[in-house]
Amino acid sequence: IGNLTHLERFYADRNELSGTIPESIGNLAHLKYFNVHDNDLDGQIPESIGNLTRLEYFNVARNDLSGQIPKSIGNLTHLERFYADRNELSGTIPESIGNLAHLKYFNVHDNDLDGQIPESIGNLTRLEYFNVARNDLSGQIPKSIGNLTHL
Image 1 (cartoon, rainbow, N blue to C red):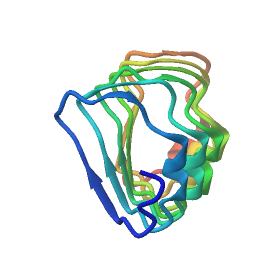
Image 2 (tube, one colour):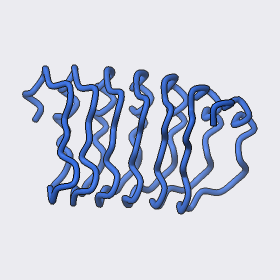
Image 3 (cartoon, rainbow, N blue to C red):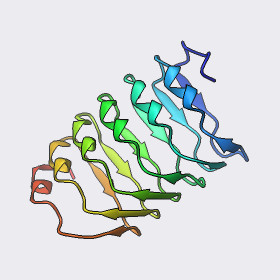
Image 4 (cartoon, one colour):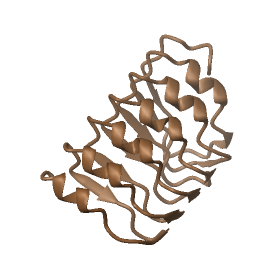
């Protein structure tokens, strides 16, 4: 897949795909939409997704993905929708999420995420939908959530 450098949209949702999302996905410099939800993919979300600076839509929901949400997600400044619900993701929601100025939808419910909701969430002033239900999050709801007037 890494050789498809001019690919803008990749849709392979609702299949029975298995294996991992290849690290070479980071080579797809023109990718705007990536949708592989409802498959049997495992492994981790590659750190190289941070190279996809034109990405607007990322959906890996309903798979068997594990590991952490990559810190490099903060490089995706055009991202509007991030869906990774119903996986086995662990670790914390990265502080770098606060860099996603265009983010409207963030859904990571039904995972094993822990730690606190990052204070940087308050930077996401376009956020309309935020779902972190059914995880192992703790601590207080950040005061900065009050900045999210579209939520």
